[in-house]
Each structure stands twice: as C-alpha cells, then as structure tokens.
Image (tube, rainbow, N blue to C red; front, side, top):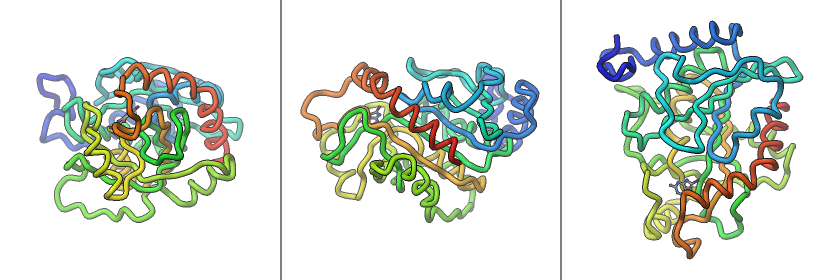
Length: 277
Ligand code: 8IG
C-alpha cells in the first residue's frame, strides 16, 4: 500500500477515499466514538478554542492515524481530539494541518477533510491565520470567509470531476456566525502557494481580482469538503496586514504573537459559533 515515505497517500495507485476511510476507522477506534458531527481545523491563533467547545474525551497525535504526516511548523499542533459539546454533538478537532507548501501534493493537504467526512461530519469549519487587505481591518481581527480564489494552480479533485462551488462558504452558516457576533466582517480568501509571503505587487493583484485575505491554506480544503458534500464555514484571523498594506516587513514571529494576543477573544467566538451549529 505505502511507498518508502510510509504514507499510503504517496502511492499514486492508492485511492485517497479508501485511505480516508481507513483513517476514520482509526479515529473511531482511538476515540471510541463511531461518528462525529462537526469537524474543525484549527489554524494559527485559533488553538485555544478546543478547550471552550466542550469536554475533550480523547486527544491523540495525528501520526497515529492513517495518512497523516508530521506537522512541519511551530505553532501548528499535531494533535487530533474528540470533543463532546453541551448539546451532545461530537466535534473532531484537527490541529494538524498539512500545508500545500510542504510539497506533498493536494491529496495530503485535504486528507484531514476527507477523513473528517468519512467519520460522518457534515459540517467543516476551517480556520486560519492570514494577511488582511481591507484597510478597515486590524491585526487580531477575525473575519468570515465569503468565497475564495485558488491561486495554487492545483486541485484536490482528480480526473474529470466537475464540482459546483456556488455558496462554497455557506451563507446559512455565515449568517449564523453573525447572530453570535454581528460585527463580523467577511472577505474573499486568496490561497497562495507560499511559503514566502506575497510581494506588495502580488497583494495589489489579489486586491484587483477581488481578494481581501491572503493565506496559504483553506481553499483546497474547502474544495475537498464540498466534494464530500459537507457544509463549510471559514474563518480567518487577520494576524497581519498583507505586504505593502502594512509598511513594515512581515515576520513569522509577529504572526505568532498577534495570534497569541487575539486567541482568547476569537477562541470564545469560535466556541460560541460551534455551540450554535
Ligand atoms: I498568518 O500575509 C499569515 N499567513 N500568504 N500572506 C499569506 N499567508 C499568510 C499571511 C500573509 N499571514
């Protein structure tokens, strides 16, 4: 099944949905939970939400699950957990995102989403840390993703798989989020390949083509979630203004710090939204 990397997804003849089904079986075994209802991917800055959503029944390293790889970066937690909400819903929290810039291909990037769908989750909540283009936004501000522009030049879909992406980031769920916080603004997320941040010219391009948020994740995951028939909610934490919008250079340290400062506020927002799902 697997080649020399030890990850079955790196075998081109493997069916990624079969690998996701095997991963979902691992999760059922590790958690003792047959089905999850909601899946949540935690991006930079969003980590503290897990504690507020409900009672964590089980935490385990993502590496114990078929097809998951080790996290590449500090600030990205490589754990999965199963949380029981006060309403009795089961939330699979994914703290182990694989980024496209790691170079393992789109299959690996969306494996957590396909696995979440295979555990039974019908709702996919995707969060990230990102750069902001709208001048009214401030670092530390959470915003809803209203749509995306996929600038990776890649897709998680294989072959002639034509998938409609209308209302990809569910209007119903965005409206529901705004019942929790009416001040939430929204914008179009541009997924760049990374890992370098954009040049100011690239940010001007993103703005010109209708983008408001620049990041390195989420769009490919949302496509896979839609393919799996899930309803999607997307949140970006604006950790920095995009290059050229802010005049000082971008630093990864600054991004981590903005995330840390915003964490209590956005985590409680996210927990309240998940509680309302
Ligand atoms: I956090 O300014 C974070 N992630 N592409 N640009 C891109 N990704 C990001 C940025 C940013 N900030």
